[in-house]
Length: 380
Image (cartoon, rainbow, N blue to C red; front, side, top):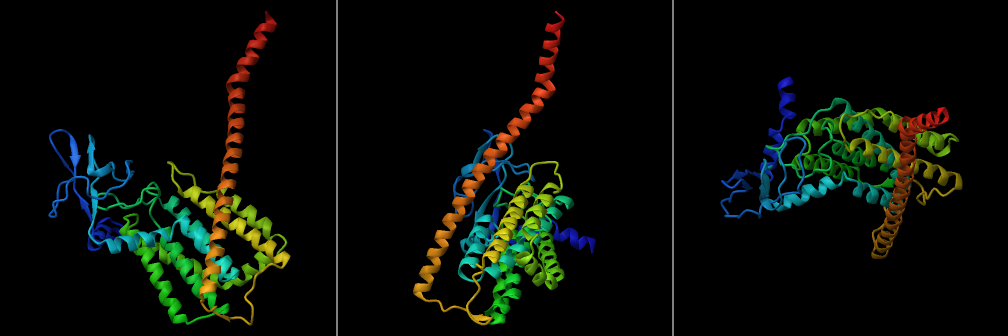
């Protein structure tokens, strides 16, 4: 059993999957002048036509990415070659379903065009599984697959630990939360919904292998942990929903709990994006929860018209145009608000940090010198 777990957590299954999908490493060769260039292949591609990413360091492998397939001095991380562009684009798109750009567009569009109830429940479950997954990463501290032999197509989160895959957790929770919650609100064929949920979650899981960011064990554990969290919390979804919308202390809990969870997040021995991303997710959950509570108090619940479950609205050209316009307007307002609040928040934090830092500096250095100088002058 331990051998199987070690194999699933190793880089070779990931590298083999990448090669099966048409993603190959291009080994670097050093010439006598100290330049590293990717050698030509059977198709006689010259140096500079193989694929590569930015000029930065890979924390796991110690290899340096080189631009245009060539570099001077030091070890160069092997470039990669794409031989199946259809799968390449498909998996990159699937991987993007777990990034902020998807959450900031898809979840609000569900609220604006389908049902606020579904969006609220998605945000609640998404926040839970993402927080658990991020904390587990920084507690277990299991590394991502090394490169080589794995090709890594993403670098922003490379400093994060691997297990579990939060992409797999988010994809599983979002897909199956909609599947479990929608039948009480909307009329649709459950088998079709199940097929869509399995397909989307599977594509996102496989994309984490294709991009080289997770081992097979990371992905399996992510999907299983998400499924277990949904299984254990499912009986309490309705109870929490009622509390979130009607309780007087709901906004207090919605603001205090994320602050507490952010403050008590596990400390790391190196910089990682996990804590910042987790704080952002908790902030989204807090703001959404307070907003839903305020809407409930004002009677602006935007419930579907008719007896639940209601039929899915007929897709017409007019309805589609209205939905697209609503989404575009909402996303512009949402992104604009995000940028303004982010800029103001950073300015306030910088100002506070500067004052605190200056105060400590004066206390430990400046004030002591001033006091000593003043006391000397008084004695003289």
